[in-house]
Amino acid sequence: MKNQELTVVYHLGELRKRIIITLLTFIVFLFGSFIFVKEIYDWLIRDLNRELAVLGPTEILSIYFMISGVSALALTIPIATHQTWLFVKPGLTKKERKITLAYIPGFFTLFIAGLSFGYFVLYPIVLNFLLSLSKGQFETMFTAEKYFKFIINLTLPFGLLFEIPLIAMFLTSIGVINPMLLSKARKISYFLLTIISAFITPPDFMSQILVLVPLLVLYEFSVTLSKIVYRKKSKKQQSDNNIIPMKKTS
Image (tube, rainbow, N blue to C red; front, side, top):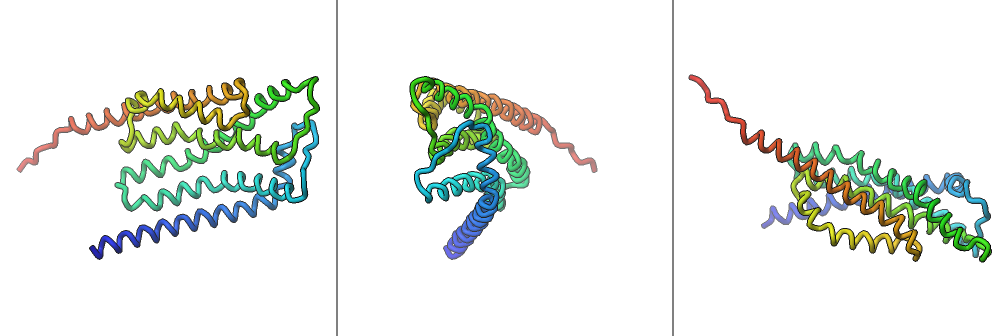
């Protein structure tokens, strides 16, 4: 009983250590991003042919912290993933350690790819579509806060959602899920993705479709990757089972 209590205390202490390291890393990146926030701000509005308005002096500060926070989050992802791996590492086999460690660079890469897709592909399409609705009818004026919230709502979720294929591969490789389970869950998954697309986009049908279609493609891509990993894993297990141990000769 005492050993179990010591084990729990050790794990809680280790978890606390990993969380503190991650939070400190985020804070460092937050302040680092804040130093260059004006350059990031200028880059984000470089193609916007209009002035952004602010409704008060404090709004400027909140916008800067919003931009810095997203930048810090993106930079903290690999550190947070590595700290998570260090926490679960003692409970993994040598093979599982190699598998999980190999996925860490992929998490960061896909997160950046998701942000890039949302910003460079989806954002201009949705923005131009919405502006076309007001052309000749309304005088459009953007507040800086709503403009950057609009960008974040279209980009940040995709940074997270682009992790789905890699998560599917990882969970399949360690035996938590399989492609048959993903196929059976297709209907409920489509329903959840539809809700997500409606939540992160403006309330118009075209914008929601532009977001929903890539999400459905991501899910189907995840199923395909899961099938590939599952097939390779099954073949390896079958070949290992077919190996006949050699009898020692005297």
